[in-house]
Amino acid sequence: MGLKVTNPKGKTWYGAKVEFDLVLKSGTYRFTNFHPKGYGVQITGEISGGDGGTPATNTFNIYNLSKAHQNLFKSKEHVIVKAGGYDLFGIIGAGNITKVAPAVRDGEDTYIAITFVAGKDYAKNKKIYNPYSGSKKVKHSYKTKSGRTITWTTTKKKNINLRFKNGVKAKTIIQRISREAGIPIAALHLKKNKVYKKGYRLSSKPETAIKAIVKDCGSRFQYRMDDIVIDYDEKPKLWQTHLYLTLKDGLVNMPTISDEDGKKATWTVVTYLNPLVANGSVFYVAENIKSLVRVKNYTHSLDDMQTTCEVEAV
Image (cartoon, rainbow, N blue to C red; front, side, top):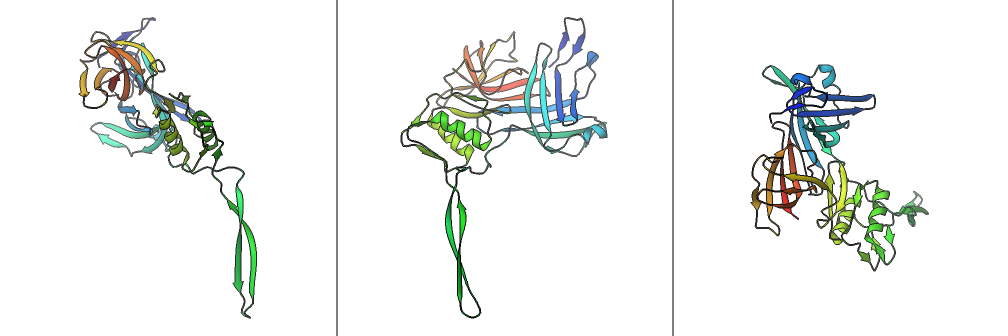
């Protein structure tokens, strides 16, 4: 995307801005492609997300760093990726590094590929139990050389599943599981707060249980960037972005229909890179669709500075 921007102080920048922070215990290192007259490091790759209920894995490349700076990137360190134009710039991804590939030579340039997961995957978290677990007696015995049998009894801890009383509501269960399992939920909006008349017993892993309860409530469990969000489609104001997109303002080309065979038709919309667009975002498209739409999946390209998203009308 060719971009020339002059800010209110009279400074001119060429090209869109990409920036990321590497957050370490010793401090934060900031890398950017954006400086007056267009000088800066080259950053490429894609940052994606969607409403599938699992954290997105993303990879970006950064060119021509010194060896000392390359060595700063290690697994488990936190990164924050930002991008956009001068007047529309913000966070498009954040998470912990899972892989740093060895430096690769590309002509006169050298780059490293950094992979991170946008949010923590709690699917492998262990089951949680009632803190007041019970116990059971276990008998042991062995026979001596003289033929005498010696027996003794020990007490073994017995895990007891979390139980909730009759008439408990879904929101109460989700909040308790979230707290006990250490699964932070950034937003919790249920379409219906189901009542479990016969109570509820937690027998599966925490994330699996939360997802099942959310489904019972006609709602959706998803990751929005690196946050867990529980909401439902009939709440268009939740992530309202106040964007009104036309070919003259925001859209790269005309929206095209991508699936009209499902319950709801979906469209492909391409905009100039916009950090306000993420799964769940709601905005108005004035061309072809002519409706408010909600984003299902999206990809921010750091190469051509465009955002491609799959949307459905609301």
